[in-house]
Length: 541
Image (cartoon, rainbow, N blue to C red; front, side):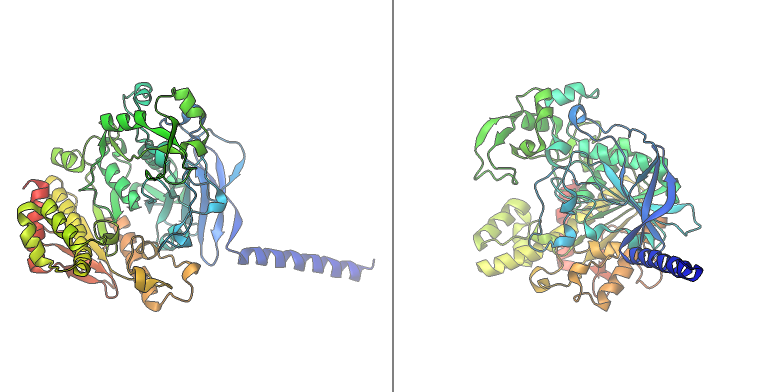
């Protein structure tokens, strides 16, 4: 081969290598050479296309809670040797198989290709690798899913958009369902604290402890951490605000679509009784439905060793319902009880509801008879005033007014929570009401539905709705995500390009409306007067 031929051959090989590299860089992610050192070992991540953001996915923050560690508090990660490649989400927690449902299309569903596993205690970090600020605010997001499903791999939870606004963004997995919340007398006896049932909350606390120890390596400030959650994740945020075990691990909080004020968590005794009485059924692992389940064997009467040997698929057959438990250790009491005692983690709170939350929380279709009976049961001496404010003379009007009143009811609960916080704490509350309709093929049917605000809070516009997103969506995403980022930085969502967002003030049921034209929203005077009286009853004023 001549020198010329050799040179040409080398040029072709070099060209092919460069082409391959450009092709790889043109894909969504590519592996980075840069390595970060954690307290458990070294990791590498992946860079986001078209930005300076790097994502590290599937980082373990605790040992897999399997075998003897099932239904135990999360244990420290075992250190590893070499560089662990963290460019792929970890599997979601054990749960019934997920699929798009109603308005919750694919971007709201976990990546099912990753599978489901008890080895699920992982988290993900987005950070700007080119930023010179090594003390950036940290946002830790807790997913929803009714405490029975979900995971951090949902596309709408992508943290790149918020990381571009100067945050270090963390999303976490935690145990759900029976593996996250089973209480049982034998589990309480072995725990060392006489409690059981709040394993998911302990997972979240372990993740926050991991952030405290490691986030500086990503450029984050461990002394400026905001926790954020939506739906069940928002309930978890409220629980962490109440938990003494989370003290000092976060400094601000965002809770989307749950107030927790009206929620009735089980006591430890109630939860232990339910756990001991649980039975295995023949439903084949689908979500429990008491209409078609047939009890085929005991569950709670087995030994702990036998319970821990059950395959996860068998656990999904257990007829059981649970959630956070008032155990006096992780969760010391109900929200009003803890607030009145002044024992909460008193941090600034940004919270609100989506208009379509009413479809899940009280605004379901009812007949006229049901509507009137519900009013009498719910409002007692104020029922006539309620029915005058929300009048109905037939079933169709009753269904419409039940939904309309549920929107106000949900907003009143947010107001009540802020009022209780103001009476028993010092940190401010910032309230919003999200009304924007997420675009899509069924937008007219579902409107501003539960979870619709996630895309705008993350400033993440998924390809599932390509062709539907508009300039108005982009503008609102820029507004909402900027408000969240400013709040995470300083505890105040106000900033350029937004009408003044005042903090909560007693006596005014008002919010920042996040909709077509973001700005102040206040409930009509007659309805506000009614709901203030209802709130006074809720709070015992």
